[in-house]
Image (cartoon, rainbow, N blue to C red; front, top):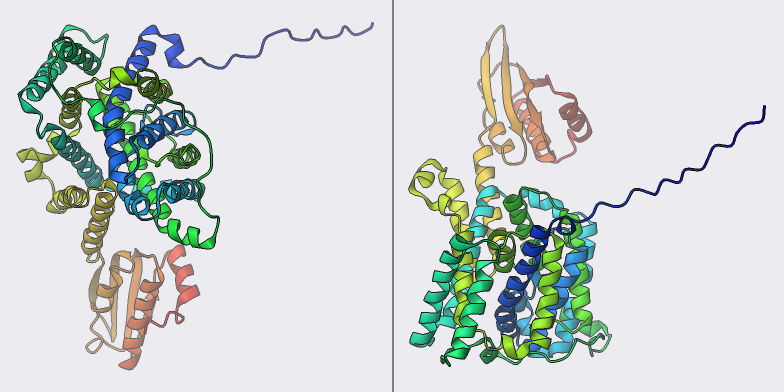
Length: 501
């Protein structure tokens, strides 16, 4: 009987899951409005950072647009906002001032290449070594830095400017009680802009800080000579931009992870930041990284969770400054200050400075948090604060564990003494190990039991060599026993070869 051919399946391939913002009108509205609010908040800061870097305000605005749109696609942390930042502006300012915008753009391009390389090398994994106290200090320093950054906008604001500020704060508090359908910052900015225009209130506006672009950015390479001298000039600044940008971006991504109870790919974020940096440079931008204040507006204030809000923040920014520049220029500066003050209040970890918390927290943890905050405020650089806090935490940890090795003498019997070593033996604790034996008073035979200890490095093997040598100098023999497999293998490989005697 002839076989019947099996009919070919006509089932359609399984469709890819639709994004959350396509499945829910509520999520879509939240993401769209969050992107619009963030775009409004990016305008004055991008202009300010351009002035810090010594470039035209248009450069900062174009940078924010390109960084935002690019990282929304290739970045590793959904809902995180990347744009022109003050930290990067401070790094590149001397280069721009001394050599011009062309060298600045070349440094940004090189920084992007370095960030991609660091991402591929796995530098993101180093974030696991940043202690919790440093993260807390980072968040608190962020809040204080945002607050201090608003003070120049309040100087000379006049009675009208302060009135707009107070009205903005009132709206930000009252609107959420009436409705959560529309973000309170958007309502506050829109209402106050309309009122100041209709009532002809004389207040400082966004347009007073600098001209907004009226055309789309053009693609091109920097006008610098492709020579070794150019590379030597831009390399130090490129390294600074790469490291500062990655550190701020990774810390911000970690913060958003905690706020949203989700995980993100830090390696992808490193590569995404580098890609966005290159894209920014090709459009003549000043570079940037994650913007913590606007990220808090997007995630914590507006409730955004997807890449759509990140993309729309960049897209809306371009539409606002190019297509609606005259309207954006009329926004009162103090209305945006009110929004940033709300961000400051929400970002600060008030629990970390509560008296009950400070009494219960170890002093070393509080010191690390305080040093992180102080370094940030002194240097005006969040990355330096994280480095300073992490280094202090490492020093305090090394001091604490340096005394964790304990050596106990278990008595002397028939010309033989036995010692038992307990704890972790490594470079910080091995120095104490050498001093805990009675070389002159011990009998001729000594046994050192490592059953409850683990040896980690060459410094510790050098210390064991020194112990054996000191007993040998007194005509005595020390035998080391009880090593676990890893310790024994390290000892067999390095004993007598470290020069530690």
